[in-house]
Image 1: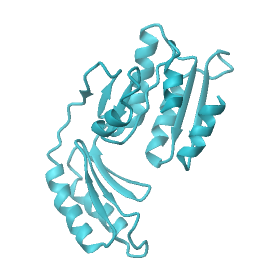
Image 2: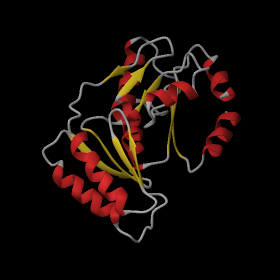
Image 3: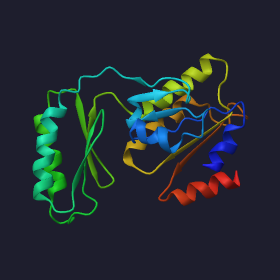
Image 4: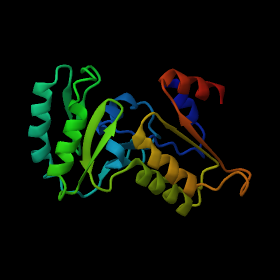
Length: 208
């Protein structure tokens, strides 16, 4: 937290972590960072700083009523699994389940079949199966933040993108296409980072 606070002292810095966590958790964890922009649940919710209201994407979430009973069936049949209910998504966790049981792939196939005509996307992440609204990605919210900064005449001098999951790939791609490379504009630097542990990121921030 102290590292984030030090970063926020820079008037030209416009940080905005893009997380899949709920907006309530992010608001609580990062409450001391009043200037910090946040995006929650893959960008479904977004706010520019602590003093602005959360904005949300308009989406049809009726599919949640189809998904939740199916996930409950697989949870009851798979020891060590659990369901996380978010405002915009449903997540099936299987980190503590037997990897040889095969429930993950079965659930993926089942959900993709029943949601074929619904405005929802089924994706497999690190020990999870998640169903979220169609068109909601971290990449899109990254593009939105960078576009807002550019239109306000405050294009970033430095962009650091950190991820640990497949869902971060589109965020890397969006930032790569939106931010000029160092060979084009010497002051613009874009860093992409895959991290297996928060301690690695803390070390990078403390050294920067």
